Image 1 (cartoon, rainbow, N blue to C red):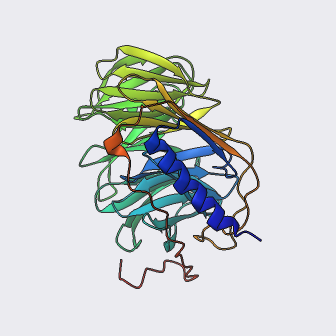
Image 2 (cartoon, helix red, strand yellow):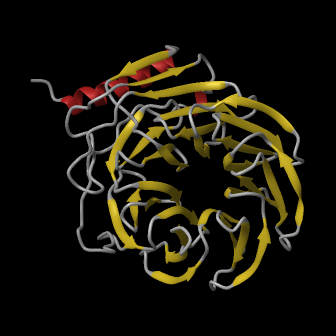
Length: 368
């Protein structure tokens, strides 16, 4: 009987070679997951949080090849600290730390109830949890040690301006600014039901999910600069360079300049919210089990990952979930020549090394 994992790895390697030779599409017996809320880039790979599937999926950013799937309880928001992926476990009231290189479990740490968003500020991890009686927790990234937890009303999105963190308060229709000591520096009026938030180097862009606009705030003092219409129900927002990208829950990805001018709108699937940027492309995850890849400079569609059913997860938190046969299909179709040749990595596969340490807050043997 064939080894299903070996067959899958050979298939992935084979796809990579075909991409180099110019093949433009492929299909294989794997899946990404269902209801993707979080998506993050680690410098080489895209990670997607599959909430009800209790997994996170790792895709190679250069060509979309499936690298691995790891089991994590109720994953939602994610952040990358330069070495590790931090996952908010919405249904577990914890955050999971996975080593980005191989998915090894580095620790599981308690936070508030129903953590949603995770942010890395260069040394610490911030976790937004809960609803009306919400909280914000700050952990030391090196070992997950808690620094402080403060009450924050219905926190959703977070953005870091280099010194302070800005948190959207969905129910209260405002944004709260908090410093590293956990002190609230100000509360500023946003639009209706703010969700996502992004910093462009000068201003904060707030997605007003209950309306059809972005609220723009000054990073200096929180002053309201104005509102920018973007269409119905904006959710996720991301800023890089001279542009702001907005995922609307009506299935549209909007691209604006940082001056507030609409550049274009693109079909982003059903209920998109998570957005990541890999240096060339925008990756958008939606709530119906798909990820779309758009060329950042033009907005043209690079790839669509269509999911049929979730993978069957492994038995352990942090363990590879590809040890057995998969139960569904993923279809990823790439357009020809949209990925630059110098962006293709060498053909390789992830090591299957992973371990599980049941001690809460455990750290790795290498002292990380």
